[in-house]
Length: 211
Image 1 (cartoon, rainbow, N blue to C red):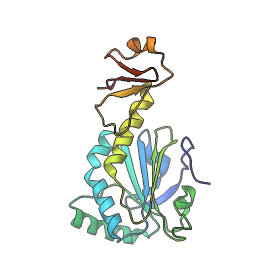
Image 2: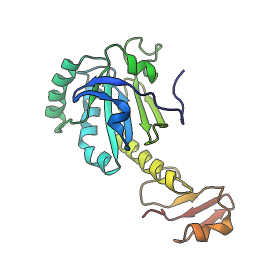
Image 3: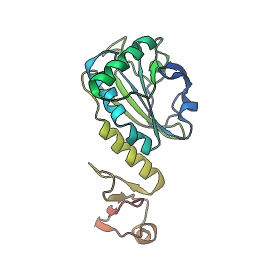
Image 4: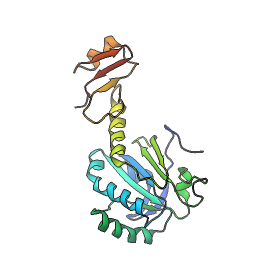
């Protein structure tokens, strides 16, 4: 069965390009992004890992550790990193898991047999410091992911974990947010002193509280 939101993210030990890791120990108190790739030395994957490396500072700023995975062996990963760095103008420093026996891929449901019986699809999981699954996104092998969207969602997850708010469609960090229905309208001023707007009784907005 595939992992669902709120499920515990399975722990694992794996060989990676930075050495053997225990997933939970590697994450520590950080958030995590674990994402899979169909294969090394493929064009879309090369751009994806390059984009992730170029956004390394953005992930670090949010206390997020990134791990990539494919079912190819470690020596191929290390050789492929040279190509990624050269063609994408980056420095891949995050670990790439060599999941040759597909242990991690099967734990996380990354292989979709009707798409490919041997390769992982483009699965992505955001995992909170509590080791629970906060977000899952699955793309087909032919479509590269939008990593700015991944950062946007992490901003929302981290904000809504600490405040009684939700984020509207197309929200970006710094924009107004929605007060959740559980907060009574009369309680909003004390909870959100920056002010609020009542658009409908069920749709109340307030400036982002952590800005």
